[in-house]
Length: 116
Length: 112
Image 1: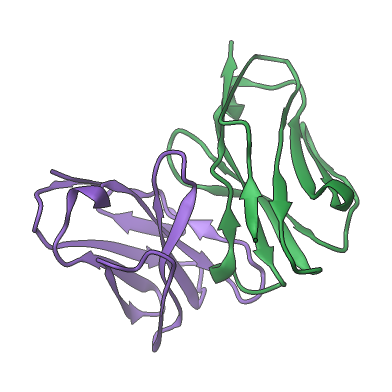
Image 2 (image 1 turned 60 degrees about the vertical axis):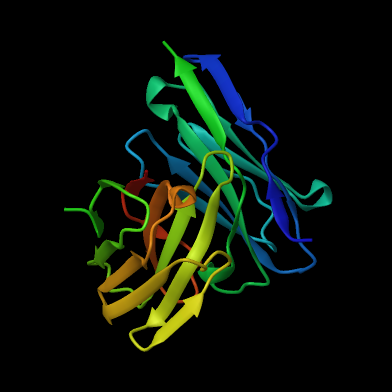
């Protein structure tokens, strides 16, 4: 099976707390891409990051960081010192086999609410 | 202006009506896509096109059709709308081989 599981449907935290969004993927391919997208209340999905299956280095971008672990088939996303503007639905996604974006598989999303 | 523009942004229609959702892009990308988003289900691919003469069905194409009028334009039609086509529809583009998708702001369709 090829799929992406985001087990956390909704998360609510108080501003300035750290929060981690979980993503577990399944694929039979040894090469693949993983993605995170953000969907703010305005509606459009915004690309956050792409990882290559051969690159397990963790990545940090400001308050955002991503932990890619092939051993557990996980690609988790952490927001440090969360802010109200981080409130959105976040989608994890997989493109198996380095194929085109037409093969992208989205998780069902995690709705993150940051309370002031 | 947005790189990927969808019209209309909101539409309420009745069962049996024909509906067209339009998408235009200024990214210069050859690849364009139509997705449907339902609550709790993520995004599902309806149709995609890799260039003007190329149209491909996605996982949920039944009840939908598309037209790629130009490199920058890709429209989605519902020939005879039904209530379970009520959803949020997204157009997206991608450059070759990057996998990264650029989305429009979405078109919310309600079929009564």
